[in-house]
Image (cartoon, rainbow, N blue to C red; front, top):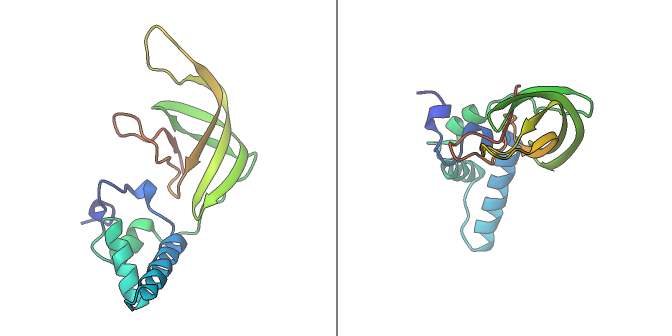
Amino acid sequence: MSPESETSNTFPKSALPSLEAAKEQAKRLRAQLESEGTKIGHGHALELVARQYGCRDWNTLHAAIGNRPPIVWRVGDPVSGRYLSQKIEGEILAVETVGPGWFRLTLELDEAVDVVSFESFSNFRKRLTAIVGPAGASVEKTSDGRPHLAIDM
């Protein structure tokens, strides 16, 4: 069974935290429990965090996240991918870190995309802003479960 298949439907791989964020979450959990009178080891805290993301254990979560270096987004970098299921290409105009492994990206697209799916109405945009995670996908999803924005990695 692959690590990705062992994650819950609630947390797709694109929504998993970075390794640093998961370890920090375990550290905060351990401190909170200790302040309430329950002492646990760091390993136990890591296992509890893994279960919160639908994984059997820490090793499974670690494999699902991957042990690759974090993505670095830079202003001016070219990007391609899909926005609302439409192919896009463009350039990064702005990058803001919103959490470990999570970034708010503003993109200038080469071609405008229609952000409305209604047949008798259109709204074209060449500039998009979205928060993407370590896998380059937004947490926000369309009604069919696809991320609003998915950047090719």
